[in-house]
Image 1 (spheres, each protein chain N blue to C red):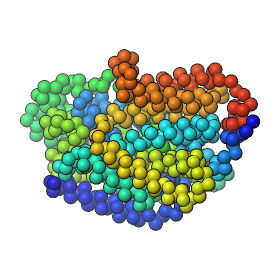
Image 2: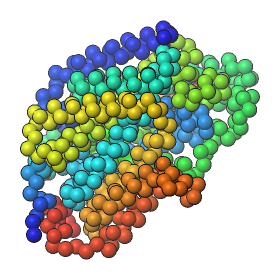
Image 3: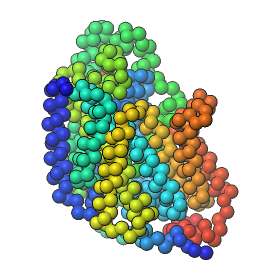
Image 4: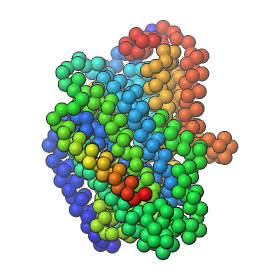
Length: 53
Length: 489
């Protein structure tokens, strides 16, 4: 029987990559400004919603 | 054309976004940069990008349209969407990211076989093509409100302008500008909501001079509406709320455009947590937009529900209204960008490279991706001229797409999940959903009293279970499974 499913060369690049140190990091220094932005939007939204209702 | 302060703010803002897009162009080198931003996006970058993508035409113009017609029950739209994002983050994101996939159908190949992947590609392309049309309609509604242009021509012009903008830099430009989008959305829309509820509502003749929802209730009653019903969080009824939840929970974990950013995450841990953080940001959006839609109804600003949000923002303080319009415009641009990329990614990577032309190299793939952005974008711009009902049509897309999530979930957690079941559950959802939406041959909603998301979810779920239980596992079936799936079955 022809096994066509697994011999498609276009899928060969799909494989689970090896874990590196950077694969364990949740946050790094580049996240800091975006974290401040995130918190600002979150708090700003909550305050305006509460005072408007 | 009306030259207003709001229009000037919008033009200045768009010029700024184009400038950011040009800066991002320098980062694009190959198809991976174009489609998943080189898989190097950090936690907060991914979370604000997902939130900005999700706060699009449906979340702004669409929710205001529903609130204008049916009241504040629309708040469940974003609660359900947040639940879907949390489920995606905690349950699915790390699986996708670990396999380095670019599209959802690609992941279905891992779980099943080639025919499932092909069916998923077709289902996704159909869904996203329709979604692009809906979002461009929303964008046209906003521009028509601001400029006074005809709604149909506004939709066409916006669609073509967006396509040209996206052709420039790809995913990097979207990721790069999403931070600017999020600042504008996160400040502009709540600021406009605050202004409407505290300054404009008391000024309405029939509000009794009271601010907030109490004043809005007075004005709605004076307009001859049932204020208690319109302001109730349950004004849409149980079946619609259930439909929102099923649409969100079943739709998002396989929603290419939204989760595309997780595929571009720096690692699988970032991919898993970022959607949860994004869910928190999107929660209150329909309170803001729904209230402004209701204000337009109570104040009699327009008779067209699609123009409700734009009409409100054009009739308040011009600076605050202009910032609010820029916020909604930002929400629309980020979403149209996300879905056009989602659709073009599947067309170029799955359909074109893997299915039809396996020999296509990276350089040509980037060219083909741009060509598909052009084809999908321009055709959708013309489709937007038909002015579909925004949230109504969107749930058709969510519903047929729910079959994808059912296939992914069963493939991950049910050993008996059969490739034939995955294939047929998608086919049944697509055919059944289309028949329901276009009343072929009967009015299914009137007959079964089910929301389309419930209808499609049930169809694909039952089809999957029945076919899996009655399909035999032969040596051929096993041999056609990818190696990793074969070991786990």
